[in-house]
Picture (cartoon, rainbow, N blue to C red):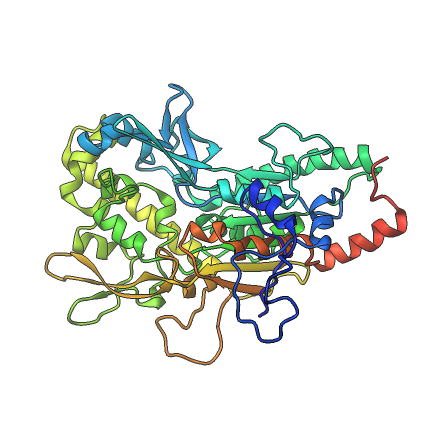
Length: 503
C-alpha cells in the first residue's frame, strides 16, 4: 500500500519552512541514484490550494481522544478531578477525596448508565500539566494533532475565528473516559447532530445550500477509535439489555464519510489486564493508582484483549485464561475481587460500614463491567461490510516492544508479562489491525472484521504517532485529496450548481 507524501508540519515554523524551496546544491536534484533520506517533505502547490480551500466540498473534522484524554471536573465544587498534578502526589500519595471523585460510582441494583456522579468531561487534554517541586511541566498530549489539522486548513472551534475564515470546521469531542463506550456513543450522536445544524446554517447563509447533507470525517486516537467504530456501526443505540448482540445497521454511516483510526486497541491490549491487577502509574514521578479505583472504570474492561489472542495464560499448564470470566478474577484475587483492596473500597463507599457488604458491591460492579465488556467486544467483532461510501483508514505503530502475553501464577495470582511483539508500546500492531490470526494458527493474509481502506504502519510510540511527519503527510492527504463516493458526487453537484463559492 503506497504511502502518500503530501502535507506536513507540526508547528507554524515548520509550515513556513516548507515554502523555502529546494536547495539548488542538493545532489539529489535530477539524480537517479541518490540515496539521501529526508526528515520532512516539501509542500507543493496542489497541497497549498487544498489547505486554503474553504467550502462544502471539504468535510469538517471531529477529533476524538483516547483513554485519559479529557480533563474531568466536579461541577459542584468546580475542582479539576483529572488533568493537573502536583508534586504532593509524588511524596504523599493521592488524597482520599481525589480517589473517591476519580472512581466510577458503584451500586447494586443499578445499571452502569444509572450510576451517576458530579464529574464530567469539560476539555480536551491538549497538554498534561505536572507541577513538581514548584516547577511546571507541560507534556504535549493532543496539541500536535490539532496543530497538524490547523495547518491543513481546518478551523478549530475552541479558538476565535481567524480573519478570512467564515465558519469552524474542526471540532473536538471530549467525553468521560471512565464511562461505558455505548453510553458515550449516544453523547457523540447528540454532538454530531448539534455541529451538523450549525454547519447547515452556515452553508445556507454562505452558499445558498438549504438542509445540506453535512458529512464528517473523524480522527480517533486509541480508545476513541473503539468509540467511533461503535458509533459507525450502531449510531447512538445502546447494547440490548438482555445481553444479546445488536443488529448491525451501520447507523453512524449516515453522517460519517471517513473514519481515521490511530493506535486503537481494536482487539484489546494486555496492559489493561496488568494495570487492573497491579494498578495504573500515569507518571513515573507519582505513585500508581490502586487497582480497585481504576477497576471501577467500565471502559477499562472494554479494552481487555480478546480471549482468542491467548494474551493471558496460566504458568506451567499454558491454559488460556478468559479475562471476561469473573470466576478467574475471584480465583486469583484481582482488582475489585481482591479482599485486600478494602482500604480503598472504604474511601469509594464511605456510607457502607461492613467490609463484607463493600466486597459484594465491588463484585457486583465487576460482574456488570465484565458482562458489558464481553457483549461490547462481541458486537464489535461481527463481520459485515460497511457501506461502500465509507472509508476506514488505520495508522498503527510497529516499532516498539509491546506486551503480548502474560503468565499468571496459579498459586499467588501474580501476573507477569513474558512475551512482547511489535506495536506502539501500548497497542500491538496486530490489535490495531484487529488481525484475528493473533493467538491462532498462522495463515496467509490478514483476517479482520474491519474492512480497512488503508493501513499505514509508522515507527512511533502510542502518542508519538500523531507527532510524526509521516502521519502529518498521510492524514492530510486522506482528508483533503482522497475522495469517497459521497465526495465525488458532491463535487459534481457543486460544479453543476456553482454553489461552491461564498456569495
